[in-house]
Image (cartoon, rainbow, N blue to C red; front, side, top):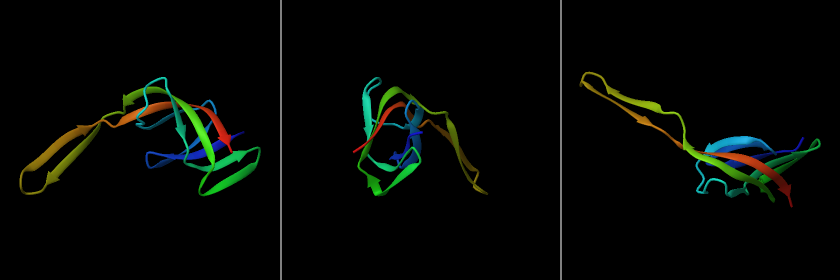
Length: 104
């Protein structure tokens, strides 16, 4: 089984070909290809390559959807001053299908 560990949006993800992934928003339109070049690890048929810090490999995918995540509630409270405030936040996300993992 072939898989890679990529870094995008300040987070690391383990991906394999054909997998659907929900990540921080990338500025690419729906249906357009996206390329990840920060590959930290590559595993293929029991052989593992580690980057220091990255490898010369690319992971290609297609953006399926640009949407927002579930709403989270953020509450602020200060005791004895009668101050409390609640606001909500929805993080923009991208749904990406991984098409190909290629090493140079």
